[in-house]
Image 1: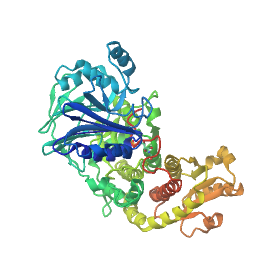
Image 2 (image 1 turned 45 degrees about the vertical axis):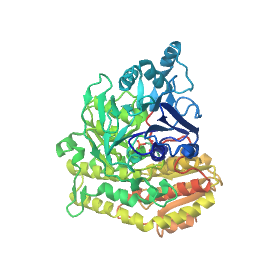
Image 3 (image 1 turned 120 degrees about the horizontal axis):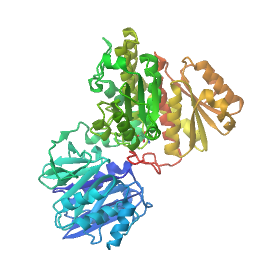
Image 4 (image 1 turned 135 degrees about the vertical axis):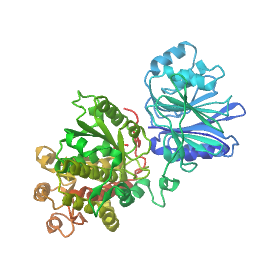
Length: 613
Ligand code: M6R
């Protein structure tokens, strides 16, 4: 949902801004722009389309000696993705310039007032009102003018402001949109998230809601937007490094992240489970046997792929810990008449920790007295700061818009949490917990051993089916959410219409879709619903549907059903199947998108982190 960067220091500004924008491009990529001061004047270059177009337009300015500037990569909310609507936006004088991520909800009324006062607008964006508001209040003191402007603005913002007549200062502010400041030697940075800062510094300050920052070459000062009171906060050192946010020889971030799953799963369980003793250590969740026993219900709250992780975990938690679990789409949950109280544990699940709907749902549940334990990947993100506790997934930066390693590491964290609850509630034998831990520990090496084979088969299947216009994904029990996830992966990166369905529901409608052109992807491990799945797939076959089956090595029933087969190993415990069945589905989606010439890492109309409603 837009990425913003800012820099002040001693380096030439254009390469710094471009590097930052490159790592933020996954947040939005319909247009981009930068601005910097030069000899008291403001320079601004903007371009419609991907960042590479802006990069070309900036070629002649690369060597500018200026060492301060701001930049933006856009995911349009107000105003079409045109050059005129690309950020940065300026005031009437063309000397104040603003980049913004978020939505100014009262922009229409503010714009009318400002126009009546003589301000002239040149874009359709909500952001431009901020530049004119700052102009209206500017009386020599830029931070004060920004502070007053923000008091008029309703909605959400992360922003950076530069004034060409005071080029030794940047002003940043945030409310409900992410913003992080980087601290260097004689330099400071502004960015929407951590990966943009990693090539330059790992020392960061997370700006809180309703705070602003004044950055110069020697210091960063924080203050409250409401009354200007000073805020003291030390910087924190992040553990991610720059290499983690690079493609490392892979063609796409998505592919790299698919292949990183063994490591991401291992990083998520490392230090938290002990195979010898069956001990589980998650102090960050703040749970005790007493609190776990008193729970009456668990609410898992998420969007998109994270919601699918929640749907999967429901089976584990209900079966092992014997607590009812509701899995809520955050965008629906937040507008319901909620039955939540302090006997309910709410678990928001989010890779980014910034998803607006999940955050809003968290806040509602918290207000109603629920304890909140987040499952999150991004250190210091808003959801982690508002939850009572956070179980980090430690998957490392996920850059591809399609979520892959974040999903399997969320599954890992939820699996461990489910075991902890079972242990505290004494609903599983200790020996069973030990076995389930032992099973999880083997998952990374199982994936490592098989992933190349799955990939090869996925390439062959993609070459057969990449021209299909629709796909149906079927699964039962734990593989039902995995079917949903497989369908989501395919549709978001290949633009092929795909439905995920509970296989048993097929006869209630979707079976009408089946004909000789429809590929049906069925996940069929030998679990307790295996026979039922086989019957469902027979129903597809008898209607001449094309079957792509994922099942266990050596399963002759499957090889008789179809030649489009991906074989997976038999795991010691079917509860572990989601960890491996997910991966070939990611690879099939990736290879089909590639065969169709789609932009895998930056699919159209999407953004990595959805910080608006
Ligand atoms: O950062 P979050 O996990 O909260 O994001 C939730 C969804 O926006 C995200 O999973 C989305 O569905 C992905 N593009 C799916 O690949």
